[in-house]
Length: 463
Image (cartoon, rainbow, N blue to C red; front, side, top):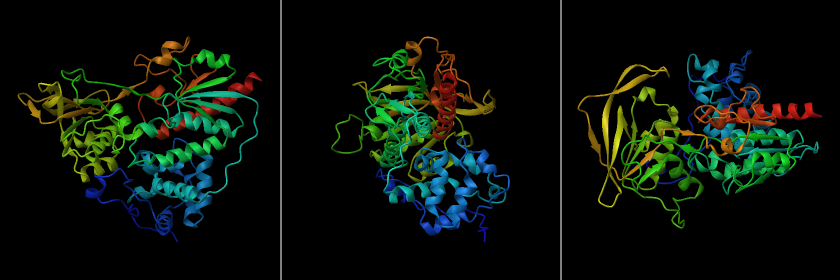
């Protein structure tokens, strides 16, 4: 019998006044009984609109049907046919704008909690799996993947399953890209990322860290070394700043640096020597998921007051609704319709405050959102001693500057075909944030999977 409850089963989580003082995972996951009950809310629609909303095209009704039967391992196997990172996607994908957005149950209530069920199936499998996946027989072809973020890992996983000898090159000392340096432990435990990476290694994927393509070795040299195709999935890690006075003061961070020190270098652990300010009053400028992550991290580092400073209203806030709600529950203060115009120094060139102006919404701009305009005579000073800039990122130009024949867009993104990832350079494919600019984990994975399919076809055509 279907479960016709109009609302999702609630996700257990740490209490807000407890979790905002630790880096343990906030959401605790469904119990088996709850997962079965939630799965029974699925109507197994004939047209399966949820699948169309999934960038990697997971067979959602099929895996949920297994969940409803209590066959959690069977559900995992169906998910893993399409997704290389199910435990990751179940936690960080914006399901409300993708698969769940098209769920029929959402017409007269809340959609089925597809993401929570995916997370449960992956966690169930990872807690019980004992054997290793069977390594496919080699097809004798070698491919290179630049970057070990979600696009690169998805591409590498699909190619490895086809028998390719895949080598992933990662600039940092640890594989995972944004999954390890960008997303905090309390949203995505790093042990889960490592488990997914270990699974890829068991499929035969080789990962070389501390290799900066364009410095350590070039794209041209990869081809000279015998790689037959290259996928570029280097993300968009170059931070943007506003260009206002005071951005070079001590105590001003880009969100990338702030989160990398915390997530990758574990600055929140007492025994670590990673330099980071434990400020009392922190302003995070921006309204996306990265801004929420930075603000919630600052709170966990001991800040008494943490502000989200965003120039539009709550309705225009681009972050996931769940992340905004969690931030508010944890005591983050939202200074909306507010924009910085300068950062003030003390006598030692540390931050002593941030000069802001109030905003109001005018006519819609090119993005369709109402353009913020400055209110007259509204200037004020926000009392802070650290500022985190989280207003976007762009791709690092290193590969572009060291690779001949690679076309790029005016803002720095690599030009690549949407469905194949093919670039202007023969044998070179690209996808994820390096092409689109900062987007979501699952969209990057979808691009990696599309490129893997195209690379396979390219190499076979050369035969």
